[in-house]
View 1: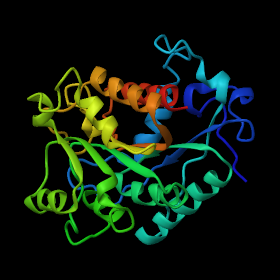
View 2: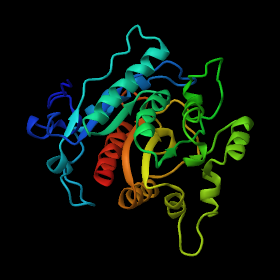
View 3: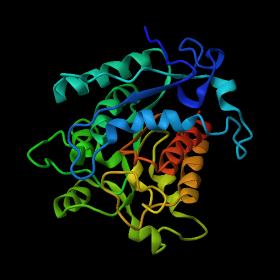
View 4: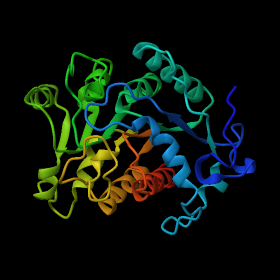
Length: 299
C-alpha cells in the first residue's frame, strides 16, 4: 500500500533493511501543505529540507545511547500530493492517510507544511484513544475562530481541533502571541496554557518542581504532540513564517520531551511551520535533530 522513499531521500539516509514499510514501527509522513500562511511563506518546502538535513544527523544518540533506527526501523513515505485539491479535500487526504497508518499500527511522525494539517492528523487518534490529551508547543495559541475570512487558516488550527476534541485536554506551552478573543477562549474553555512570560518568571517552578513537571501533571496517559517550530526562540530557529521573541530554548524543550516520553504514551507527533531560508543550513539541521530526538524519546 505504501512505498517508502529510498536511501537518497528518506529520513537519516537509511538503507532498506532499516527503512522498509513492512518492518518499520516508525513512519515519517511528509505533508507539504501550504495554503494560508499569513506572513513569511515557504512551509511547503519544510519536509524536504528536514529530510535532506537529516542525512547529517548522527545515527547514534549520545544521550540515550541508542541507534533507534536499528531497534524500530524508520520508513519515510513519499510526500502527500495536494495538487488541485480544495482545502477540505486536502485535509481529507491527510486524515485518510493517517487513519490507514494507524490501522497498520505505525507510530506516525508528520512533517509540515503549515499548522493547518494538525487538525486532520489528530482526529483519527482522538477517535482511537479515549484518554488522549494534546501537548501543543507553539508561539501562537491558534485559537481564532477565523482569520482573514478563513476558518481553516493555520491561525485557527487549535480552534478546529476544539470542534471535535475537549479543550480541557489541551496543554499549550510557550505561547506569546494571541488576540484577546483567543485569551478569552482559553479562560472560558479551561485550556491549560503556559505563557512564555510565565515560564520565564518562574510561575510553575515551585517546591522543587519545574514547569516541565507541571505540564506532565496536566497531561493524560496518552498524548499527541504537535510542535510548531516557532515555539523555539528565533535566535535558534529563524526559519519560520512568524517568529516571536522570548521563545523556548533547546535544552528546556529536550527536558520536556524526554519527561513526556518517559512517563506518558506518546501516540503520534507532528513538526510544522519550518520555512527554510536559502543558504542558512542550521535551522534545517536543528529541525531534523528535533525529529530524531522525538523518535528517541517517544518510541
